[in-house]
Image (tube, rainbow, N blue to C red):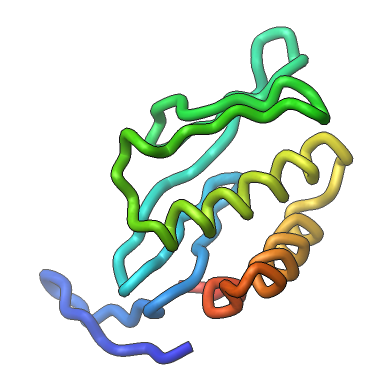
Length: 127
């Protein structure tokens, strides 16, 4: 993963060209040094389902272990961002339903992204 400086108002930040940035349960997909997100989830009030969020807006829902509905089309994200987010969301739903820790979840996402041809996003940068 190559890093190039990008200037900000008063600081010189370094951002990877591609990757995923994590903050608790939220994540941002980094593509061409631009962040898309946050992607997040929240449990339904009855704890029987999970709402999927992009920038705080609902875009899908996990109804149970066999049913997941998601549609990111309205956000007009780049194809690679949608693909990476879809893999991550699938892994998150599996992780939530099976009680995996955040570190286990990240490893699963990294493994699946690599398997689906998105290894450049699988590296987990810390910014």
